[in-house]
Length: 493
Image 1 (cartoon, rainbow, N blue to C red):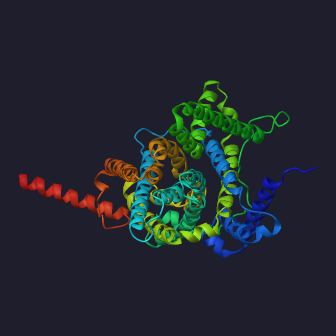
Image 2: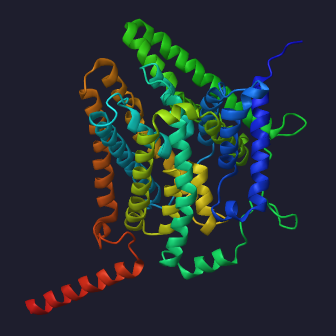
């Protein structure tokens, strides 16, 4: 019988690459030193396989983009359905501060990307698509799934190969996250950006092979919430995720039906909404979680199971995303891709430590690492960097980041919904759409700066030429201010 096999053949090939990458990470110091995620290593193996060898065995990467598209939404749903962490103490701004730091990177990357796009359009590449620079925040700060999904939407506007270009930006972002992140860790250790106590823990820790040794006590990854003879807990949690995905599909179908009454403009908007289906998947998951709370059955979901489901989705998504890159398409745009990725990487490397060392009052270097990793790679990359100095997640940094994702998501919904403005500039020939997107990026930048000023207060411009605001610098400034107050009081006498 002639059953379709391609989907499972692709999964099998990706799985082989992931296992080989795991072996390399366990055996080779280079991969351990730079904490290169196995999914990233597997992706680059598959990149060469699908571009040069797959055709000789009757395979191609034509369906990998669709796999990435769906896995992105599934990972969003799984993380959204997780039970929220315990409420923080009153006045703790760790969660909102994390959102401010992330949004600042969105705004900086949007501004850099669009201004560089304008430069290339007016000089070397006049035919460059106006949305090209938005792949910096899409690929770096959001990830391969979003970059591909939105890029696919731009192909309908005339940007051929946009999905592949988005995946390329995401792959380069991963490289910045791994190598830049490890450089940042080593530089921070040399410059004593972390406490002596934390430094001792790092030196005592064994090299991260990525696999637990056989004599090590294994951590608990998930808990059972159902009786196994009735239904396996993983099946139950996975079914919840897939039900939400079905509901998000039905929601988009309903919105498409409503928009069809608005004619051609409505149908174009509907196509764009399908391109950002992960947004509606997350919103549907939030509504579904609210229903579970009302029915008092939220406890039947397990955070560990949902994290594992999200984890397998992300690993497959990252590997498949890099494998889906067409080197032929990338070759057409290698100059703007190179310039933009280098500029954006340097900007993140410089601005994240400067902002985070002034924005936060506790665990500043840990927060710097997770934000740097998440704003160049993805959330798992940020967590991998954090684990170098906080291997057991003893600090609230990881939970703050997870909780801040919901805050960030709601704040940037207008940004995501306006992401097609430069594409409309190309279609209509009206540059005002392009500059409107630049203006939106600047608005978010102003919002981030105002929030930063309100949170950081006196630390905002304290020793502004220093990329890292050391604790001893803060104490020095406090002593100077105290002496000034003392002199002022004595002169009044």
